[in-house]
Figure 1 (tube, rainbow, N blue to C red):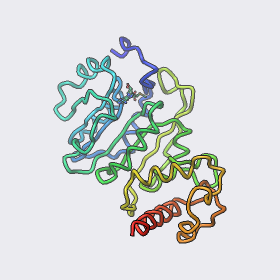
Figure 2 (cartoon, protein in one colour):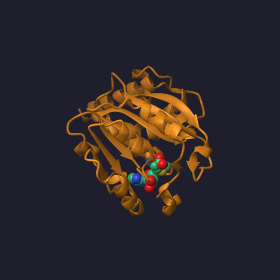
Figure 3 (tube, rainbow, N blue to C red):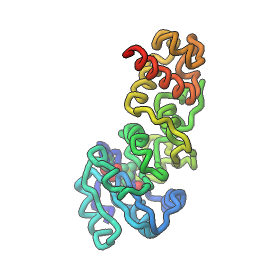
Length: 262
Ligand SMILES: C[S@@+](CC[C@H](N)C(=O)[O-])C[C@H]1O[C@@H](n2cnc3c(N)ncnc32)[C@H](O)[C@@H]1O
């Protein structure tokens, strides 16, 4: 059945062909009968099949490519706890699928939009129990990066503000069809016990602006008084700050805006 499907580059299609890796990914999700699971990018359904074997309460599979739909329907059309969502991930509101419960999200993500998908996750933090994603190794390394390293970027700070991230394993290109040019990695993210309750969109833009021209000192980007109140040296650069420093800094920034409104 897979043979009649031709993978497309524009959708980042690299299908997982190693059953051992597929099983491990699903093991990392620790699925039980009350779980609502969302899979991003079903493709021809190798990961889907293994998730369904573990019998969650419900699996929603989101897939953008209409050419996969007949294949998915033929394979899983008669499974009552599976629904295919024939949409672009970015047009789906995960909240509408969660039935007021926490969800588990999984995906061998399309690498061309993996970072964008990740950036969406903090906006769903209140309904997420955990996520398990296959990513480019380079992106996975950003997710666990520490300050003062090349891998420490906007994505590291924004994700680590909301999630504890575990790098679970590296996956060589030969386990995919067609093989991608890069090595991949599996990461698991779980919401942190304590997360800031300020507006996520504003915080995202704030962190992103501090990382633009990352070699510039913070005092060229943000008022010296705000830096002082947050206890941060003005001559530091964004890449030298801990995640907690960004949280402090944004809180002070919000207070200063509030004060100036008077
Ligand atoms: C790396 S493949 C993984 C396929 C399959 N799950 C597997 O592991 O073999 C990524 C899948 O995501 C789908 N995809 C790409 N962009 C998408 C989007 N914006 N929304 C939903 N699915 C998308 C692709 O068509 C493809 O099936």
